[in-house]
Length: 157
Image (cartoon, rainbow, N blue to C red):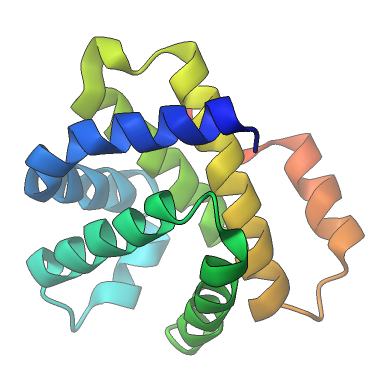
């Protein structure tokens, strides 16, 4: 990510913070509608609490984009824990697409092509690190090839 992209992500997320509860609701509604196979991961979860955790985690990540050395190990541990919930590598694409649709709805006209691209780069970077940590048995070449065929943001379009 370059500095301009980091700034776009941080500035746009600052506009989401005041509507974080609504944004979390939009996100999970979208995710469950477009990727129903992930819903069982949340069977015993209070979705409102989960939404608060999601927004808090996004805040930490967004604020840490200029210091990836600090957030990458935390993201890797989070990804490894998600394997225990049944999360699969391909689920990251569904999450990324729902995130972009949520941002589009929440930001309205503020969700420009440049903002979309910045978020896509940020998410792809972090999701790649997380998948590498959680699924080391999947050769990186396969992940790159799968992403090249249909990057997660194409699910959004």
